[in-house]
Length: 303
Image (cartoon, rainbow, N blue to C red; front, side, top):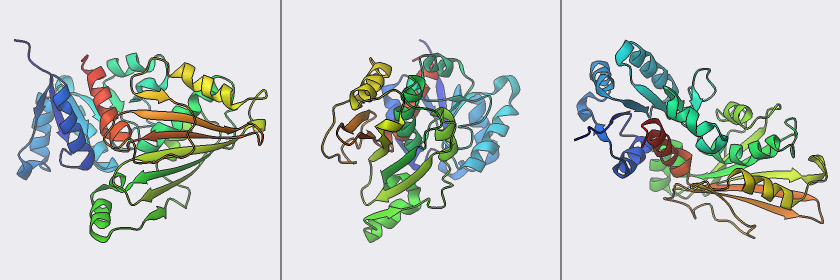
């Protein structure tokens, strides 16, 4: 009998860790868990890393960096690592875990010893922007503004408990210092030469997300139309199982893909006004977190 690859989730009890653990039932793997009393014990965690083929880190940034240092001390027994934090998404030597990013990305993830799982907001923004820049439709210096709303589950245990206990607020802007930790990730992996303005928000619903990007068509290259934008996205994501380019809709609900690992991209254009809005709809805990992790786990383990 062939032995299944062993996975250790460091941070298994968190929101993303629980989501990954639930999804692993779809793969032929063995999950190695630590007794809950020892989940923060360095010796127990290091022992778990030593027996794992792949370690998935679902930890805060500083703790993820410490965990990688711990894994590196194992030398030849060091496992491959998939990190779900922000710590390594722009770091040299790490492969960005967005298989649909480019034609070569799937193979890069499959062969990488260290992979960083994308953030939820960047997944939508990068999926919309990068194909337009690479097609020559949008200049990399375009002054990009990104608006996004997420369910409160993206804020972690404290926010989840507050919303479920207090019932709100209904809608809240945050990150208004314009230093949100996802901006460097979007800036780099979308292929932008100019730092984007990013305004995130959270609504009083558990799961779901919409990322929207307004555009002035006359500020793009070559008399672009909404149909051109739609064609560029359709061409890039043709044949992709988890990313779908769909027709314009008059209204969108952020909760529609809750529980799904898919992402929907749309172009909403006004030919008369020469304006457009790009939208990406996904589940912040699905394609925006645990669902993306499952894709990367499958690729890294050849499953």
